[in-house]
Image 1 (cartoon, rainbow, N blue to C red):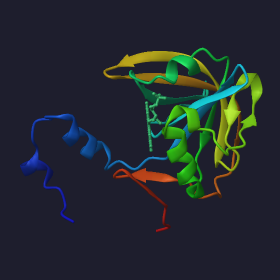
Image 2 (image 1 turned 90 degrees about the vertical axis):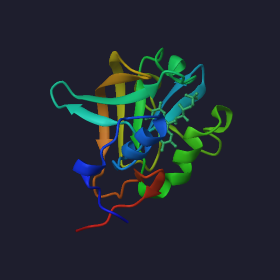
Image 3 (image 1 turned 90 degrees about the horizontal axis):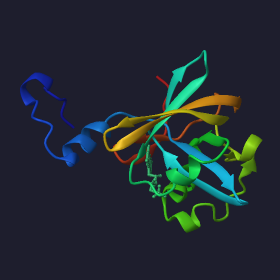
Image 4 (image 1 turned 120 degrees about the horizontal axis):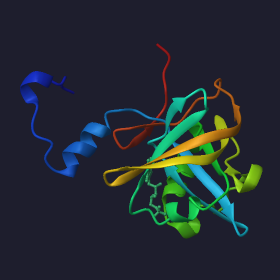
Length: 170
Ligand SMILES: Cc1cc2nc3c(=O)[nH]c(=O)nc-3n(C[C@H](O)[C@H](O)[C@H](O)COP(=O)(O)O)c2cc1C
């Protein structure tokens, strides 16, 4: 492991692999963004979740412009956002995997207006889409929270350097 000599080692942005490597140094949580459409669960996992505003209550995430799931999610009256707990890495992988098997074996909970929530998550929010902002090859989705539940005493799932990790007290 080497510390970055930021001044001396900076290079032009270059190709996507350097960018992905740098972005992966920033640890994040991961959320499931899900809803029910015509009785079918629809959703994906996203590590780009961020808190934005208290008043009004806004959170955001970024969706790849190539996503085949987002065009379905964006038509729903409400979206469920569930923050994965540390024991839910397998659920997270599944919700990022082949769309036809994303909900296999998962007992999702119905929230208001078709929002779908993952049981055992550390926080759950039912949201409406407040804005969609073009942002390069992604779109920044601004969500307004309508209802929520949370338990900060639960350990969250952490995504860092393309791996799932756990937090440690210092
Ligand atoms: C840990 C993790 C984090 C992810 N974060 C995002 C994200 O922030 N935005 C996004 O568009 N896709 C993200 N993905 C990919 C989606 O979960 C999903 O695989 C992708 O949207 C392709 O499926 P789709 O075509 O059904 O949308 C992530 C995947 C993993 C495993």
